Image (cartoon, rainbow, N blue to C red; front, side, top):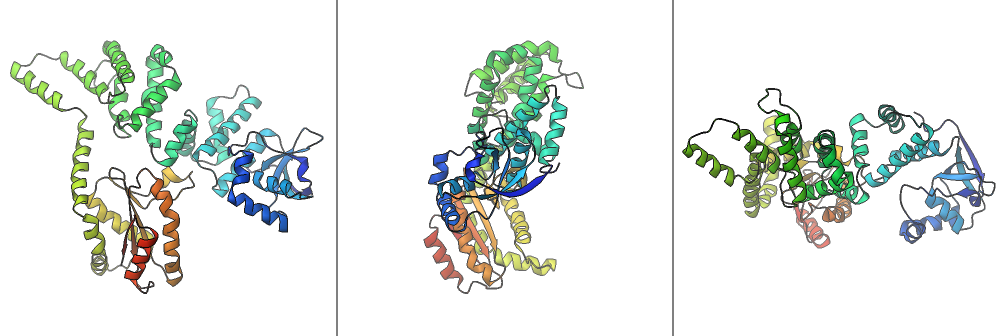
Length: 463
């Protein structure tokens, strides 16, 4: 779908343009005017007027015949500096076309974070439903795909976020809550709960249920992000081999779910544990010795094997970290790189190739290490992390010095990234590894000391 049907360029008085009261960016007039970047914009407008036109559409008002689509800051700067005329692009269409145009403009500029994009999507949906009262969910989804140009999976992710409040969306954006948890909460718990236990669903209400489950996810009580799908969803339907008959245990399942929701400390693992215990009661009675052995085993296993296994690995990894593994690793990494290049008859000539090698090394030591994940970050403005050990709150940034010009920018890049990484949930420890095989940095030790003075809390390795 194109941005607009027609577009015209012109000059009009800024007073003739009405602001959009439904601006999804959510900035107030006071917030804009206090921003230092806006003050710079005002100075530019004062001396040079506007270079970049604002985008407007027709408005049903004689006093202000145009309504703003994009360019709120530019328009406010022009009004404050009493500009006589401002350049505009006038698009054809009404409220709906304006929303679509604004969405596409900001998406192309990559200015929107998840909260703002979700708000924009909501406005577009409202406009579509006002115009097409009887539109089906399938038709709406198809139209949204045409408008946003998103892939099916990415659009479903955004629509899933629509069901949560702004505070929850911010947690996803900040990395304190996994988006995959919200998706699984919907598909593997709330949807089947609403289908099989509508009374229970209505008793709590959608909003309260989401609040409870998000709280449990934040507290680590929902297991891994696939745990709902793999271990809970199956209890809402008959299994193929008929070993578990849903209808016979429906009352038990309802009781277990209610307890899980009511008791804040209850782990999601209680649902499969309680339901499996129900299945076992129907089997032939075993000997007293076997029953006692099984009871002891069940008493020891407070969490599913999957989670228990991860906790053991986390403990082992923590011990390795405590023995200064990163000093050993990054102080001798250059030797490993040179040896690998020699044996494999290849040469690392850019950052991605180096990162792939380092990931392979880290993966042999830490099962929990994660490489940068574009799927989670594509709608966000914040930088992607090169490597992160979420269990240990460690971020590792890798830099490959391409040339002397790039060498001068490395410290600037790190100083820009550092505050963002430090604010991250996983930024307790930050490690910077700079690989300079061609000695574009003349004095590595002096450079490391300068970095240490500039970013004293980070760990710096230069080779």
